Image (tube, rainbow, N blue to C red; front, side, top):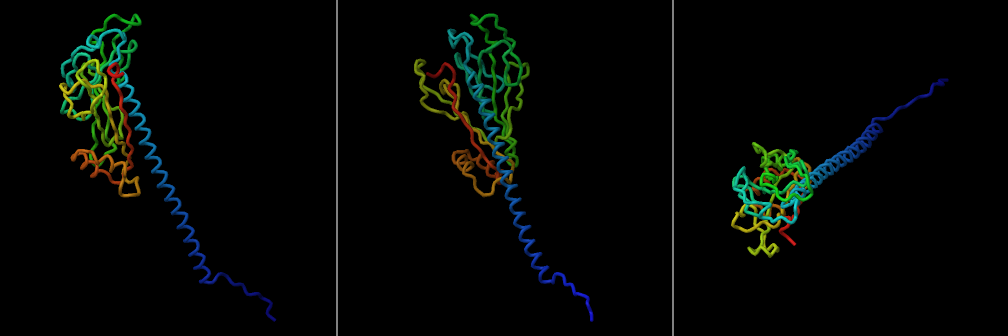
Length: 282
């Protein structure tokens, strides 16, 4: 009598069923991983836009808030801010004016000036002012004591919109040169708020696009700016972006073409603010 027991393994059908089930599980796990990775990249890009936007807003608001600052409040604006001829990429400052336009060939931006708040006050390039205060309210400061800055937007190539930069230079330097303050900007807009010619009236009656403003347009009483922040390419699932669509609705044709050409599913964020010029508003 044969006492040996027969042993049987998996049949081919059972093996194929097991492999099919395993494949479905692996595909599901892989899809979850891909979705999580895409979500992570989206959040990182959006976070980068928000961080860059906050920094840009803080930087611009800080210096626009200084425009027109007088160490001695009782001094006359025309005395503290004498007329200054056009130079180094800035249009002329009229007497009493603390904000003016960039030269027409410089692009988007503005120029501003203010008196140092403290001895050795730093400008946007980290250079200390030569002015030293020995009393709280000096009787008179020379025009050479004023800190004069120019802010300018430099767009990136259409294939690298995220490389657009915000630049700044100090006109107090021996050889003024722009230095980078921030990158990640796809586009920038600036408008100047102007009022009536009556010096007693401090109301802003209209806004003029920066490119259209000249010294005869009226005193600049407020500055309104908007920045379009952009991520790297391929971070957006959908073909359309409402943020970009809204921005393009009022963009010049050349800017619209550049942004549409370089879109390639980027993520966008808009930041902006309106800053009144010190002593020129209620």
